[in-house]
Length: 94
Length: 148
Image (cartoon, rainbow over all chains, first blue to last red; front, side):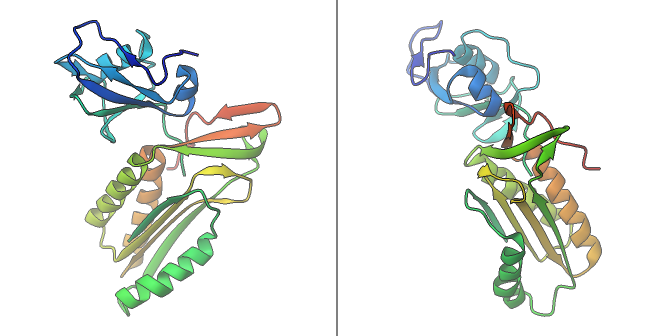
C-alpha cells in the first residue's frame, strides 16, 4: 500500500497551483492502494510525468492503458491543469 | 438508440422485447427486416477453475463515452435503424446476463456485421474489468478470449 490517497503530492518544481486528477482502476487500483489522487504538475507535463508523480517514481507497467479526459491516449500525451488522467489494466468487459 | 450501464440484474429478452415494442416498432414501422442480438452470460467456470461470482468494475463516464463512440462508429459503417446496448456492473452470480447488444436494420448483412462489431469493440475498448471469486480467493481477469 502506498499511503498517499487523498493527498496532493508535491512536485519537484515550484508550486504553481496546477493540478490534475488521477484515477486508477481494477488491479492497478489495488496495487497502488487507492483509487486516485490530485497531483501537481509542471508547466509542461505529459501523462508519463503524472504517472511518476502519482506513483512515487515507479515505472509505468507495460500493459497499463492511459486515458486523458476519458479518451484513450498514450503516456506521451501532454496534459494541462484540470485534466483527468486515468491509468488502468487491459479491459475485460462483455 | 439506448445505452445503459447498471448494477441491477436484467433480463435481456424482456429488455429486447420491450425496446422493440416501445421504441423500434413505433419509430420504424415496416422499415426493419433484420434484428441481430448478442447476449453475454456469466459462466460458473473460467480457465479450468470453478467461479462462484464476479465483480464487474467500470470507469463511470468513460464507459458510457466509449460505448457511445462505438455505437456511432457502427451507425457510420453500416445502414442501421436502431441499437440497444445494456451492460451490468457490480456483483454478479453465474447464469446472470452481463451484456446485451441488439441492432435493427433493413437487411441481415448490416445487422449481423454491426452486432459483431459492437460486441468486439465493446470487449476491447469499453473500460470494464472482471474480478472473479474462486474457491481459493479472488483473481482479476487479465485478458479477453479471442472473438474472431
